[in-house]
Image (cartoon, rainbow, N blue to C red; front, side):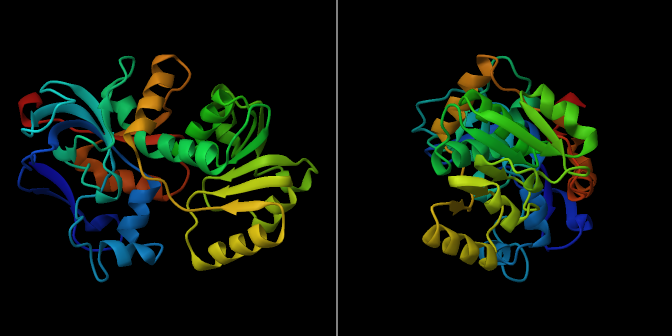
Length: 326
């Protein structure tokens, strides 16, 4: 099968289209014929080994086991292990591969009990592939870590990326009053997703407005730590989805220990129950995916270059065409 292989850390040029062995499902696994996958900011960070902790997990000098990047999948089940009961051959699914990666390819094997769910009936493969990473991360942070409540004032910093666009919509689902922060060109997109107010960070610093929020969710890692703390209500929560550097962790622990405010960071792993919840929202018309650009599998390096610039609107999708379809 064709796959995008990353055998060393570095620039997008390290990504190579190669023929690799097609996987065979184990007893509890399904084999998915991939029709769409994505390139996310997480893929870029892993490829660059930035932050340094990437090397501790994927390989110190170069990637070892996880040489095929990509964590989001939409496709059709082609084969199942003998113990699989939830799925059958031909089922259309979407899935999150999590930290194991492997989605930038023609096929992938995933455990039946993992984050594999029947695709929303009102989405294309490309739209469905863009759900698992950003939407599950937004869900975990807002619901589980932020304990979002109806009527709260929530600010989403970086509201136009894959994580931000999902966070705006989910915050509205949970009944919050939502303010989205993004650049000038993306104000219309964020407003169309349901934000009650949008702030252009190139013209206005929200931390200087005097307004306070119950939750501030930084999806990019570019907000002012001290400014966000100042803009939180007394019992507010500052969510930092992509911040796992030591300084941020220590600062967050200190604030949480010495004040009534909380700083919560970390990562989120896709779970089946989260994808089921998101599927129900999508089929009810309460969520959609924002797609910025489409690339072919062979153009994955170009997709990385674009995502690396940090200016995408929503998601960047990779369409996978199989030999029989070309």
